Every structure is written in C-alpha cells, then in structure tokens.
Figure 1: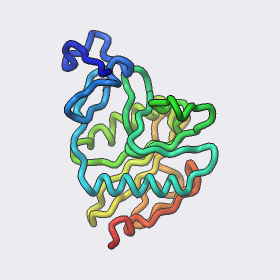
Figure 2: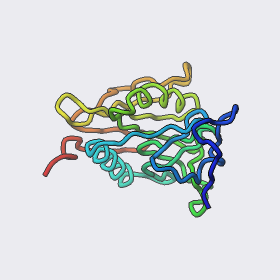
Figure 3: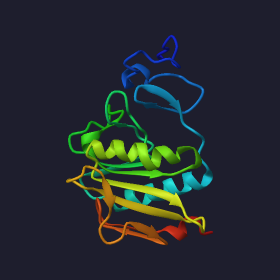
Length: 194
C-alpha cells in the first residue's frame, strides 16, 4: 500500500515527515529536505562509477563494528532523511531485518559525490547538516580537471562544530589513502582503467 498525500507538492505547515512520505509512489527519485519533497536529479555514469568504486573500497576495507551502504537514507531528523552516495555506520544494536534508515548517531562517515545538479547541496547544505548532527567524517568527491575523482576529506572539528580539512592532507588526487574511519586505500585513476 502506498501513501498518497492529497497534495504532495504543498507540505503541511510543519512539513512532511519521513513516516508520512516513505511509501509514496512518485514518478521520480526524491528526497525529503526540511519537510519538503525535492526531486533528485539524474546522475551521470561518471558519478555512479565513482560512487560504486568508493563503496566497494570501503566495503572491502571495513572493520567491525562498521557496515557500509550506498544510497541508504540517514535519519537526521523526521524532516530530513538524506540519501548519501555512501554511508559508513556502526551497526552495533541495529536490526538489519527491519531497519529502513540509518540512525544519525550511528553514522561515522558520509560520502557525497558531486554532480551537476547537486553541487550546492553536496558542498554546503549537506555538510552543514551532517556536522550539526555530529557525523565525525565527511568526504566530498569532485571531478578533477583531468576528469579523475578528487576526494576532499574532512573531520568534524569539535571546537567549532564544522568540518575542517583532514590533518596531513585534505585532498586526495590519484590515490586515496586514509585511516578514518578505518584504513582505506584506492587508486582513483584505476577507477576508469580498461
């Protein structure tokens, strides 16, 4: 059974909640932003390939108690369940058989791959929301001048409550090597190798 609000384009004064709209059968991919249903734009092959390779690298390197998902909603609050490109979370105490969204307090890392239609969200709105919610690590992945991905790695600064570049090198070009939230290494140029 699908939920059918009378007029999904005009949210109630308090905005839609995840529970009210999660089963909507809409003819487009969407996200709930501050209680409003927002159309998610199409992504490119470049975006999806980079997202998938980062997911595989994180999934292959993960350590207990972490789990890794792609395009899994994160319940920041009832009006904001974004779907990061990749999310790493502590699975301790979570029920994988009934869980729909990852609770924000379990999230260790969020990865957003910037595409043409998500630049403002991925560069400003989402990092601010994740930082305010206390997510320790954030990666923003941009398309470099040479077409290969550049991973910008950020850590939550506890004093300011905002993301700061990772110590020892915030941008990874050519090769991603990090220890947070667990050791991961990926040849970014090999993502598009034949």
